[in-house]
Picture 1 (tube, rainbow, N blue to C red):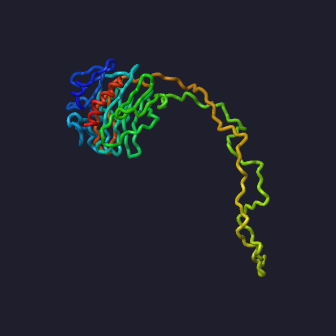
Picture 2: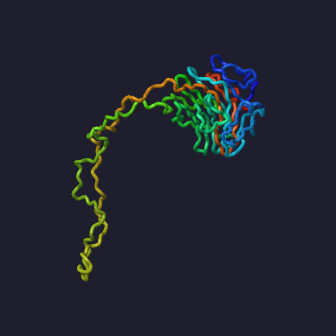
Picture 3: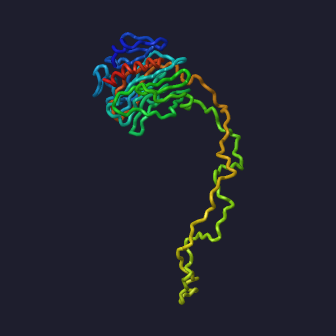
Length: 359
């Protein structure tokens, strides 16, 4: 990530929240964390497990610019990783929160995470683990060709809720930019490579709240309600000459002269195919004159539902972490950005990931 590019080319918008910056000259109202030679001073390795995987600073095996494209890379196969960076606590109350970062799975990841987490201020970084309470988990998760998605897991009142929509992530070896937008009107957007891939309302696409409507517990389908669109014609009768048996006794067969019913039992002629057989008779099907359609259970307002205009809001956001498992290592993370300005985030993406994409 090119710090000079950021400090000289990106103008920081007003009314965005200031947390921390990895730039030499802190630009107000933006948290931008790009790995540099001093990255180990900002990031804390968890000691919860003794065998967490290690990161290194590198641009990887292919890049546009060896120095500008450096990020922190997973280096050990079949490992859990737990690394985090702290910043001054903030709340997104009354404003948008844009979470953005880039990741390159240059190893051709087969099974593993590429997401980040935002934690509250009380996180003990040296004991961070998969059970640590977090506010937001966002980013790609891949395990096999058919199981790849962008996680958007949001904590609401102490419980983690995953997005009900499936958002497919990118599974090639290129660097991709992932952006999550939470707005104060409780809507959201997800971008991949600065292109919108999902939008909606938080209340609609997460099960934060009880449903607004429920089935009326006192409503019952009327006993005479007929849901059959067609029925057998009750007036249709089988023709008298209709033969619906496939075999008949052979009319030309005769009981053998030496047949002894006392010894051989009652004689019956052998069966032969019935040449007049027409198959099983069934009455014709007609439209049901009493058909009323499918009965729909009436709904009522759910007494347990209560709107919450603050679903989007978090207090004391203070730590950004990588808490992932990877079978095959080699993913490179870079360009971590938190801001409340969607246009600014898009501009940063175009001047970081976008430059790398075309280089």
